[in-house]
Image 1 (tube, rainbow, N blue to C red):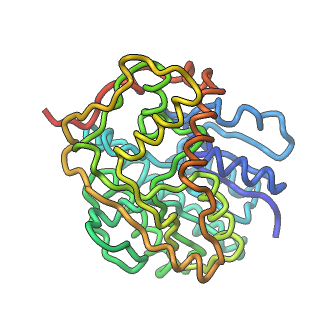
Image 2 (cartoon, helix red, strand yellow):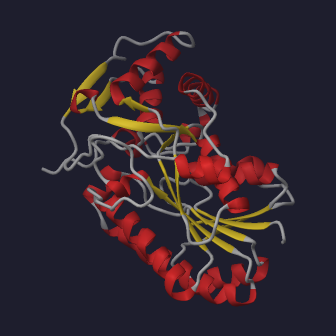
Length: 341
């Protein structure tokens, strides 16, 4: 099998970390990304001159050009990470989420369905989220549990998962679906909780939390997630779903307190750096939690990074990469989204 891999959404947070993981493993990586607000050329600039990296600025809805790239590189796998991912933005404007997360995936599936006829061993690995399961007030979601998405974002991802599975069943597509818990680490846009808190700590701004900070999330360091995706590609069974998580949940307020503890050892905190509580987002799920026993038992993978070490490494990355922020619009970082008037 050749060493060519296509990653869609490779300028984004998880995508760019996966690009790095695969390049280090000597794969030839083709990165397809439409370069929207959450994409960042900063994330992949160190790969630009490498002989085993190629970038195409392209929307996954572009049928003709995507088809040409598939046929040119004949990848042994496509990792689909191209997606609109921010819940608050999906509340304000669901339109882009439907176009990217449903129509975009449909376009990729149609292209891969034809591509697979001549490239029978190639795999289509679709990366999804724990949010498709909705509010999980007790226990942990298994791969076989029903989907109950609460936001337009989660519903669009749930739709894409169903689409992929339908192509697996109907067209014998070589597809695998992964559902991951909340990721954190380098390269993440500061609209998301952890990088937003880090940004605000560094820039002497308050730390806003929804709902008294009691919402519970399962956190995984992005590098661990990428190692899991590589394991799914190498050993995962076509037609299967795999949950990817740490099996550890933390309240948002505890995450904020841990980051403050990390920050105090690195910088002098400004007088405005304190936790504040803001009006909750509509339809906000209280808790997400995955049962990742399947991937542990079947593929011998489990997350390695302790949260304290992961948060320290993440804070250090942002502190050492202040130029990352200059490529972002301040309104994309600071503006409150997802508050229905």
